[in-house]
Image 1 (cartoon, chains in turn green, yellow):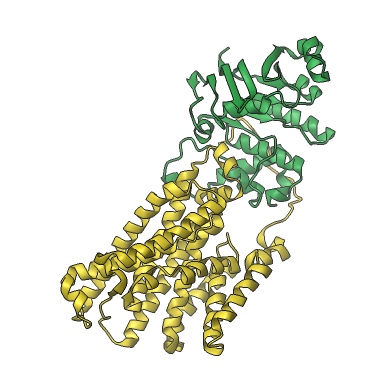
Image 2 (spheres, each protein chain N blue to C red; image 1 turned 30 degrees about the vertical axis):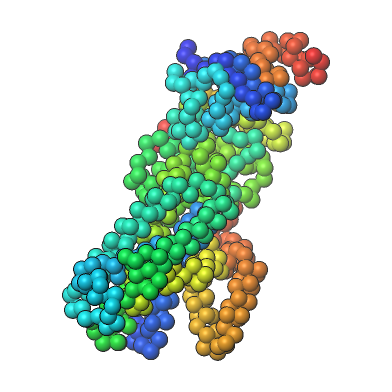
Length: 247
Length: 346
């Protein structure tokens, strides 16, 4: 099995604060990999480093064997590596369908394509995916009027619309009610198996991540603390200590 | 159907207006010019959320381009500077040089928009607004110091080869047709990916970048389109006014601010908002100048304050808040009939 994403020896510090130190991890193609760790352990910073939001100080990030640590955010996005945000980000004044329509892949977009009318196929796909996440009925409302949980679903659907190869999800179930969480787990799994999108997920909810991921990395104090299958990590004393404030 | 009727009414009314109001034809010409101002400002300012106070730059470039071309083609530089009455041009000479000058001005303006845009469109929010404010001021300073374009004493445009009524009609239809073309172009553009991308940049530019949108490309294109139409409008205005200098070509405190106000009054980020805003603004202004002469600037200032305080969303925005369903904002309770197949989507 090939790795779609390989991070090796990546470090990042902000001023004197070391957010990530010598991180090495790999995400195999077609799998769901989890990233856990206490608050402030550097998970979101790592995501930021991978998608080009800020440059890493040392180490390398390879996406499909290609070094991407010096590319900018939109360039990396066009390679097929997308992220969603912990603080959900959608286009608030546009309605859901429009949010989806503009989220199609921009990989092959020429100057001429910028001025091309939207095709019925695009709209159909947009509506189909909105239905997939349960937002079809609300598709004509401005996205900013949706509840937080619905915006999270919309952001996820927008990412799917883009058909990325690898999707980085930053806490997809944070702030969502327990009933809806099961729905989200189901959607994530289907996106993985049916659309073939590799997922790399930050998650605080242990039940969710144990259910979802094939392989989990645990981060603490900016370093990889442990890695392994969900069942192994659940009983790992170091992970338990990190979460319960031992150490 | 209703929409078609509206378009027909506006187009018919616009085309026939000179028949009933020949005395006010210049005011009506300027009304169409105001509509162009508001529409073009709204591309970047409304749809894209980049408030520009420097669009007047392109207007001035258009003004100067035509007059400079006319001088270069038909007059001797020194003779041109020293005489007050220029030998009138023949109709053919006049219209040809007008057309060529407009094209040259448009090309120059678009080139400037690309050049300046690729630099300052990287700025966000207030920083962009302040930077563009400098553009108009800088352009005016350059215009008042550059001998080649008349410097402080300005330049005189050639006489229109025809009767005063013919002149009025020509400029009326020039601005009318340009406004219609501008409106229809934008209507089409906003229905494409371009429109959605501009809105996405307005709502959350970081997200747009994270989704891989070519933001720089879209932003620059938006400004270029504004530059194109503004420049041609400027070309027309310079000829209509017969004389240009820095005050006429780069009227930042008047036209430059009005274009922002008109778009806000009607409703930023909508297609019809700027049109409605321009009509109301222009009519109000003419009324103030006629009936409140002496106090017209005070009245105008009060009017502007009222706009900003009571219509921050503009007229269309206010209507949309009152009747959202009319604008397509609604919950659709019917379930989607088609089954979703994730694999075989296009």
